[in-house]
Length: 188
Ligand code: HEC
Image (cartoon, rainbow, N blue to C red; front, side, top):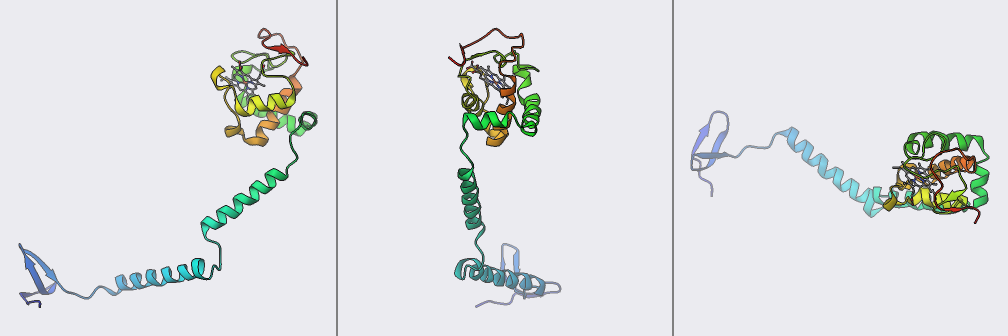
């Protein structure tokens, strides 16, 4: 039972009062009710649309589908072999893209012509981690973190790494005077 305490000019009937705090009992404004019922209807519609009748995939499901597609295209791409990398190093468009990446990301440590600075000379026939195209791809992909060579798969992506390796292959055996040989001759 509520007991009417008094009528307020603005608030209307005051139904409770406690410690000087008064509570009126007015109808909610229509704009508020309108939004409230609209969101309820939206939620019901949403539920049926995505979860009951599955008219469209939920955003999460869509993401899974997209990821599966990407994976499928990646595994369908031809495997990277020494021959394929050599072929890429003979494709001017690929080499040009690799050269741009080299200038941005590698030049600081391997110098302008690959003659070496902080990193080893890439133009001689000596290689610490092997001089086969797939060896280079491996080193550039994973890096040699303990020796100061960063991993480039994250920043460049798989294809970006392949392109920069294609460019480095064009530097191989150009024998630019620079950093003293490190590693073993390649081919062994
Ligand atoms: C912060 C300096 C740094 C940067 C930047 C860097 N490297 Fe290196 N890189 C090194 C060092 C140091 C090594 C030697 C690693 C070792 O001693 O095992 C190395 C090794 C390598 C090797 C193997 C050399 C060998 O003798 O086996 C290749 C190939 C290579 N880097 C390519 C790249 C490419 C391509 C980029 C750019 C995408 C790059 N590096 C960027 C420092 C760097």
